[in-house]
Image 1 (cartoon, rainbow, N blue to C red):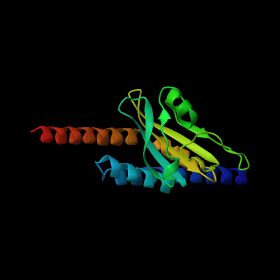
Image 2 (cartoon, helix red, strand yellow; image 1 turned 90 degrees about the vertical axis):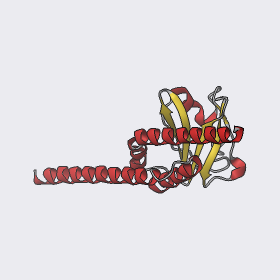
Image 3 (cartoon, rainbow, N blue to C red; image 1 turned 135 degrees about the horizontal axis):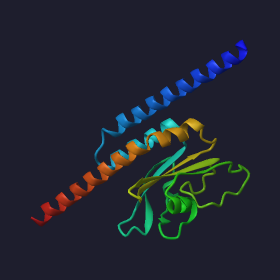
Length: 193
């Protein structure tokens, strides 16, 4: 009886500790992201945070092009620049396929190390053990797609963190994109005058 009670108490303490850590990490990410309003520095800070808090070796962000026909590489950390490529938004190809079709996070796990990895991924020749493809969706539109790759696999806490920061990330990215549009429009108007 006492042993079962002790186990239950330990499990509860571990759960509370994990929740506190999750809240602290999501708060730290929010504090870092609030500093930037321009798209390039914002994305760089976002990717640094995601890499730090998920232990991913490769992180990248893709945005839809002007015609919304494909997603183009915008910024990455840990990726060979020769391996960056665009993904069709219409044919649901490769790593982005299921994410584009469902608008939900996709986690590709248990990629065998000995497999000749031929799946089209943002990591190119890199052989990850897990890939998380994470869409930023606002009002049924994909604003961006983030890809995270790990050579060891992601901890459950990393996946929970991505879920925890999703609403904050949608709001911040939408704000930064809106700021970028206004800035671009202002520059255009200045040039016309």
